Length: 313
Ligand code: CP
Ligand code: NVA
Image (cartoon, rainbow, N blue to C red; front, side):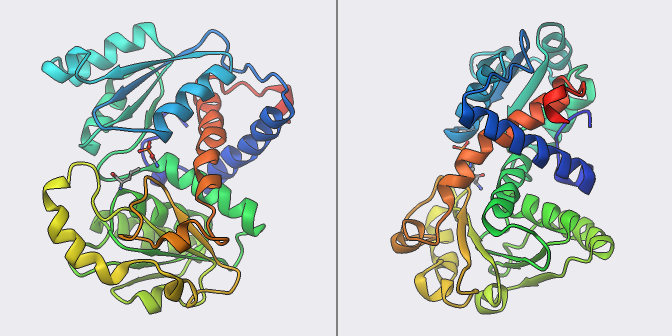
């Protein structure tokens, strides 16, 4: 594992290694045990989009690991005014031990990774959100125990979060059904890759426009905003198109009785999800948000300091 750009690049074994280390780091953090595996290391965090969870969990995570993190707004560094990605990658590699980037074009992250001599972590692009998907499935394991025979239903926009969820579910043998309006399906390359993975892992993949079909018999009902960052101009049109895809109590009742509700946040109450669902007893959205911290600490440790540390054995 050299970078984390897409879940598709990881094997099931690598994902499980991340989860094992996440569990260790989470309990060390809760018990107040020092775990300075990245002492003296520095992470640069390039942002061309807003963030609450990603920025804060990476920054706090680096601090807890004994290192430090630099917030690099693209409007403050020369990347935002025309310095090439290649030069940025080469220069940052001389100062830093890792780069996390959140931006629009997925190809920009691939380009950064191609030229960087240090690990690059995708903190969200228009196409993918791998750190979120890792934290989500780690949360699903915590809540549901074994993943065997589990089904995740994603309802709404076939966006970056949905793309990374279909990647990770098919890597790990979790059944996944995605209900989107026509024209808002997941990325076709991601679907193709996921069907290939499903043949190996045994996941059942369902792509549908029917909420009822997707949610039926599911263990997790997941949704995300209908208007992702960069789509603000389409807001009114999207609200009309997506309104039948709102997750309500009625939708939750189509899932298994002990199903949980997930959302990557930020959430827009009474658009993609009703207040009573997101703030109700089935919701695990805050666990997901917390687990971003623990899972990303594991990812950073494995990428930046992959020596087998005694506490991981
Ligand atoms: N879920 C997520 O990535 O949140 P932020 O946009 O706040 O980082
Ligand atoms: N799909 C959302 C996720 C935010 C974490 C967006 O890209 O804005």
